[in-house]
Image (cartoon, rainbow, N blue to C red):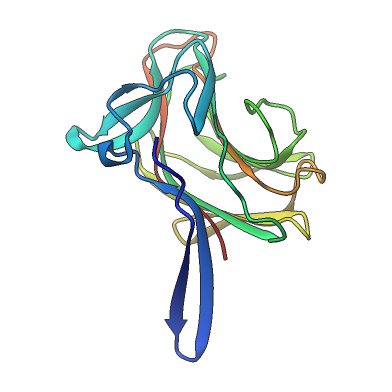
Amino acid sequence: MKTPILIAVTLLFGAAVHAQTTIYATNFESSQEFNPGPLPLAGPHWKQKGTQPFAISSKDGAPDDHILECRSDASGASARLWLTGVDFPAGSDKTVFAFVARVEKSGSPGFQGNVHVGNFPAAPGIKPETMAAVLSFRGSGRICTFDGDTEIEVGNWKNGEWMPFRIELDSKAKTFSIYRDEELLAADYAFPDGKATPVCAFGLNYYSGKDAQKESAIAIDSLQISHP
């Protein structure tokens, strides 16, 4: 598995200088040692649990363009996957998670595909403990998150559409903001768990629903974790 990238990037905008440290970045390509097929159950940076393993698949039929995906046509299929063993610099209050995501409905109202960030040492679950932010795609087509312990609908998603997201977190203020492309979906919402610091974890959760009618999936690509 590819060694996490740790680099400093300096961008110049007029007289202002903005530094960004990339902690981990991947496009899930073979050159980064992500080969097509199921991910190993225990790898150096990605681990998973559940009845349906995540896999490296071709993106939109392009054999040399890969994505990380969990897909099933069964009812009750579930999977949890999380990134581990990545060194997050100590003492930084702000963290940014950027990625593109695609979700496909199962036809079950209970379908969910979730993105989790926070301070969880193992598989992310559905409880708020250790969660700094949750981005949840529901079977109804809603996008939901939590402001503290209050669930809030922040948008809608279309079946099979690739969507760019950015989750910006402030561990000192214990707040987060979510952007889809450049549209602000959630502004300075409170962490579901105020103790989910320092932020140092990323994970995915997939559930096809107990009465799935068709094949469903959640997939991500172009993942970058950074400190601004």
